[in-house]
Length: 213
Ligand code: AP5
Ligand code: MG
Image (tube, rainbow, N blue to C red; front, side, top):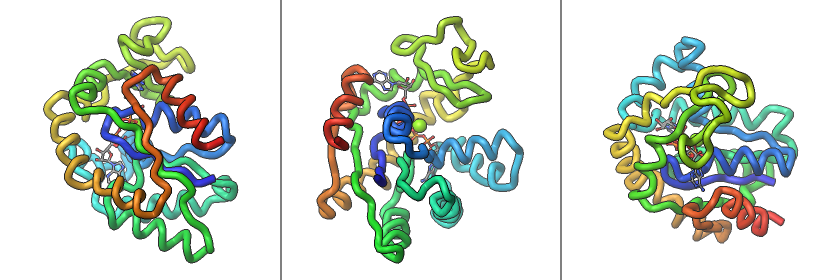
């Protein structure tokens, strides 16, 4: 099963993708997480990506597409995967479709987690992410057991650099201009499913599992 998660920054793509990956035993692939791991590791790719991410801009397609295609060619992707944060532009979607069609394959579902902009700003300020394992929390909705400490691995929780309110606003503008057109793209292909992302995250997940079966 090949699944794409669509939605604004902070809509809950990552939250849902992790649960989907676990339930269906497929890898969760987040281009944002790959870039952040590279930034943390001080790689050349990380340094390049950081320039764009800190501004709330998209990393150029040339860089992003290569990383993604390398990742989905790995053995663990044979039975499918859930993509979180890719594609984010029409050219990225076209590259993915072309690569899959060359293998006689295609994306099965594009799930749009729908959350209005007003809710997003509030969510992002409350998000905290683990510096080590990447687990995410929300100070109000999903608090860790001990403030500032990851439940899973005991490391420190931080506010992501790009979750500052002015950067979130920029990311939303970029989303509307460059990523939202994918909703029409996948609607035309007949694989778009929209879910209300404003309700409790377990209710969002229940809607998604109804769709995926
Ligand atoms: P990326 O890491 O993908 O960030 P994003 O799309 O902006 O999305 P987020 O991770 O911020 O949000 P999310 O939808 O995963 O929400 P989450 O589940 O955490 O990308 C970062 C940057 O990398 C981009 O800006 C770009 O520069 C670059 N990049 C990445 N991919 C790229 C690509 N393909 N091309 C070019 N550039 C690329 O939830 C948010 C918060 O809300 C959490 O605190 C969570 O606990 C809480 N929450 C979740 N669900 C609910 C709910 N139902 N109710 C209440 N709270 C909830
Ligand atoms: Mg995410």
